Length: 189
Ligand code: FNR
Image (tube, rainbow, N blue to C red; front, side, top):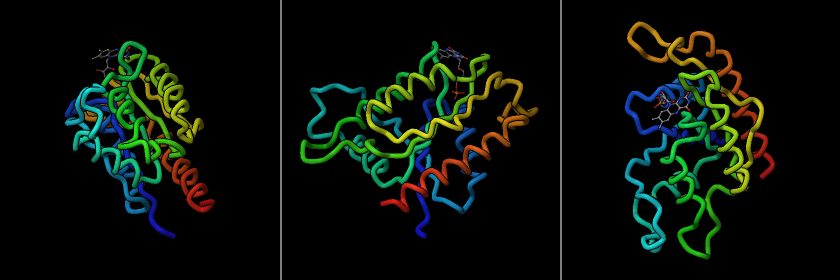
């Protein structure tokens, strides 16, 4: 069977982002069982219909990366009980095709969601909003298990890096579940 490709989309542009570190931990758990890449989308401009056609190069690139992935794994922080605007901007661009001859790239794509935050909600409100959006865009959402890690500051090592003390087994469980979820869909194609 062909190796499946998972594309991680992190809803934070911060270099030391805990959610980025969470994505890297998932990559390490999955090892060489899958191709796992993190989407770089810092250069995607703010959505503006005046510049929508032809699509900016950065937008074409991220659409291609999503198109070639078998599954998308979102790792999002929570900003004001929502997911960050940079992620909404990216999804808005992805929700529209390069031309009216093509479908949008998110439709039918398997999706998983994880997140960590300093607060007690552990991004659950942000995740609920994200599910509403990506379901509207017809993504194939794995609703269970989802991973919410609250009180991230209690999960750091002495260097301030995410150590995932208590949460590691839950990330492992979600990673395995997402691989199964994608593989079932790839086999059915
Ligand atoms: C936050 N933060 C935050 N945290 C939280 O638990 N609940 C919240 O509603 C918010 N709101 C919020 C709004 C804005 C505008 C910012 C910039 C930050 C804190 C935030 O979750 C924290 O800095 C995380 O560490 C950000 O995720 P990364 O960058 O570490 O992945």
